[in-house]
Image (tube, rainbow, N blue to C red; front, side, top):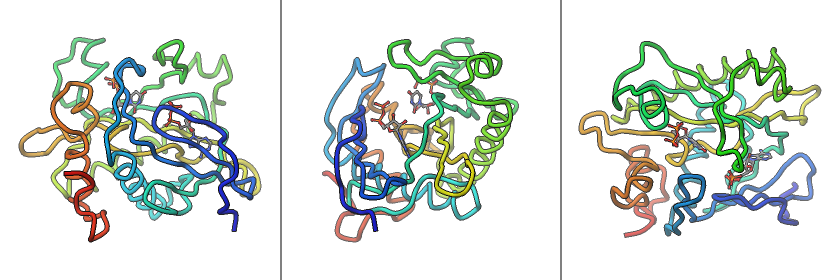
Length: 250
Ligand code: ADP
Ligand code: UDP
């Protein structure tokens, strides 16, 4: 069934991709390394990989269930999942509901200000350039995505935002912003866009709706405590961890 791990295809900051004996799938292995500020801040956080593996599985499965296509096929073990191999569009697609992070810095909007409507932004995925903000016109000119793909990406991004906002609000978490990556999947006839990579507290800003406590990677970026504790709290609000692992680390 294409589950044999073969060779390492790519090792990134947070994950490793392995080929399988099926050319349409890859295994995504979640590491414990945390990085921020384009890897200038780096640390190993025991249990982070396990937490993101379970959380990303959960979000991707829920999106699949409302027909938002994702690369997710199945979780294999505590750290690995089988996903559809994609041609990744070199864009970080960011959706924001509340001003924070680079938006607040760039435009001087006070952190925590709710935006009049969800804002979609695109960053060109290139660490050597520090992932610069790019325009739709640049995306078309440099052919990173076609105009019709761009329309579809907007639709996927906004539907995902609406759905995740509701899912998270039900457990008293506010979705401030998030990043997704989109891949071209060649598994079915023709080409199809799917959400790839991961959706986890590494790629979202999540605030407790009542106390505004941060339960995402900002805890690491801003030295505000343990991200393993914060991510475990998110996982436990959805009851995701196996019964014998309620806490991934103490
Ligand atoms: P980075 O490359 O930024 O260090 P990661 O450590 O998360 O990030 O590496 C995972 C890499 O795998 C990313 O470059 C991502 O674009 C890529 N990727 C994620 N999902 C898929 C997929 N389904 N098919 C092919 N590549 C993928
Ligand atoms: N994000 C991400 N990967 C990146 C850059 C941003 O997952 O390489 C996420 C980030 O966690 C946040 C959202 O995208 O949820 C918006 O990030 P922002 O542009 O504010 O940048 P940051 O402040 O994280 O540098």
